[in-house]
Image (cartoon, rainbow, N blue to C red; front, top):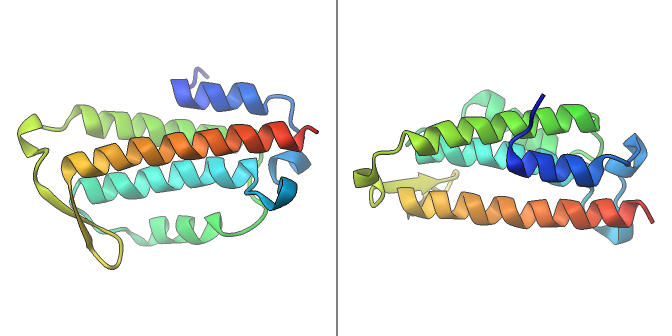
Length: 142
C-alpha cells in the first residue's frame, strides 16, 4: 500500500527494526511505537477539535492506549498513521478559507484557539514527533 509522505519517511526509518526495537526506550526516550501511535492519535483528536466536535469514547480509549508501553507491530502502526494522515488531509482540503479565523477549543479544559491555529499546531506537533521517532529508531538500532 502506498503511504502518504510522512508515513513513507517513518516506514523507511523503521524498516530494519525488530518488534522489540519498535517498543524500546533507548536512553529513557519515548519508543518509536509511542511516537508513531501518538502522531496518529493526536492528529485524529486535533482534527475532531478542528471540526468543532468533542472527542468520542473511541478517541478517549486511543488516548489511554498511547500511554501503555507496548502496542501493535510496525505495519499496523504505520497503517494507522497513514489512515490518520489521509483523513486529516481530506478535512483540511475541505476547509473553507473564510473559516480560518473561527474560534475553536481544545481538550477537556476547552483551551481557546482558531481553525488556523489548530491546523498550524497539528503540523508542528506532527513534525516534532516524526523527528523524535526517527531519532528513537536510530538509537534503537545501536
